[in-house]
Length: 263
View 1 (cartoon, one colour):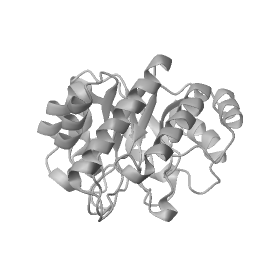
View 2: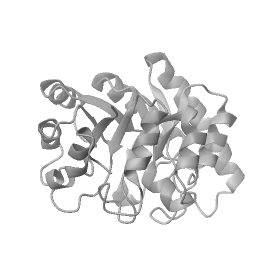
View 3: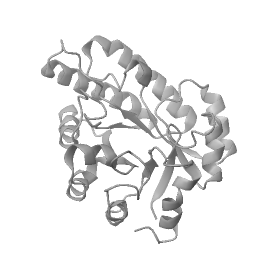
View 4: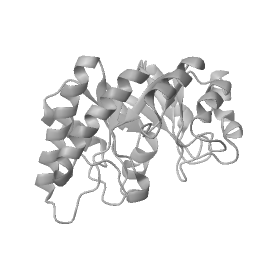
């Protein structure tokens, strides 16, 4: 059966971030993910994960400061040094939290940066990050973000992600495949998941439109989950959605899935 992780950035918003770890365990999750754990001491996070027997399955490279408009900085030549410092910080946290996957958003390009310069910078940064993480057994993942919710997102298509990975020449890079983002940009999912599957290191799920829980929109989430299961996926699926209603009420679809009654 597929394994699901609670996204601590979007679920259990009824309480503070650290309290969400306990809430995730109480709701039946075995794993958690989040974009930016860096506001909290890694020792405290590790202790709480251990206390509640939870696995940290994914974090992102810094910065992930939504308030200043950051959606990653990998494609921004003027922030190359900052990106590389962030790789070191992410490695430090990932090792402390026992996290085996670190995701990267390419970012939004500046109007004064050419596409070629952004691409060259992104590929060089990805190559650097993948090499830095590899000795610790940590995989780098790149995640396409749709341009409707993130205008100017440099990486927005799964085909781009595969091409970037190929260009790096690294075997330590995969795709963080967010079902919602790909649905917005490409519409189709089944054929695309099949095509990308050998490179997919992590899934995230939310329905469309609205990025709410599965069963609230037009994605046949049950069909997608059956496909992922049939393909032999052994990783985690992050529940990265904005709950309609309370978080616990929004998890009815997951309980139905676990009892073979979803879809």
